Image (cartoon, rainbow, N blue to C red; front, top):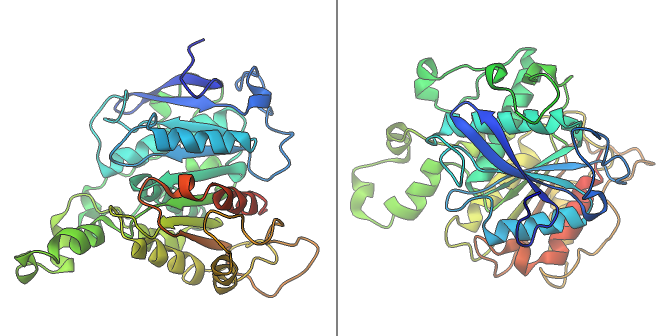
Length: 358
């Protein structure tokens, strides 16, 4: 079997995506490196957490093999999770040309492969870095909207182009080549949600980011407004709007020195996730967003473990707080790609808290 530097337990997969070959890796925990997922779909059943698989979405300026992604695969597999990492169409060694709808389509194809290997949606964590966070939010939002309406719905990608938007269900004509199960549409997930969502260095929307970084510092502001810019762009990735319809616990990671996507974007997403989502089967005893923020701010150092090693949720106690679990880890001094590197133990502790939610 082909091996990859730094990832001895990685196996190459090639799925039949809508735009051509959709390539990726399955990285298994060291303890199950010899187990075949297709032949042993419950290989992760001995992991003492609610999460068994992580579907990883990379950012725009890289591919699945970039160093800072491999670093996270190592962290996650060391915690006992199976990691599924792939390249969208037009990225890395995957075929096709990327666009907003296509990236969402690829994400759904990859999720079908994950569930086809025996990992349920409600034990699968989504982790998105940068642009990948926007893709993860869109997929989670589509799942939530599908369950809420009782049928599959297209994600509201572009309000002004709804009639042009393709309304697709599952890629039944191109089922993943390595999956032994039949193609799974979103309406076949038995009203499950992703177990949780991790958003690392993610933006609120592409128009927001372009306006803040490139329009305001230039004289273009005299000729444009945020609304007109939004109408001009073909790809918008409206994460701030779409996160409000997600129903999964959320962890947001953002560095204070992020020179690509300002820290304010992470803070805005955290606020929306904590305070603008309706109650939906939230875990018992999840603390309020303010309480989590207070705990994080009292930590002596961003690179130190969080103050408590116990999960935030206490299953033996009934609480009146019914908000969906949200945690915001602001990492002092971290850049766009160095959040995990700079705060390894704090991130690991936050992931443990998130994975313990049920």
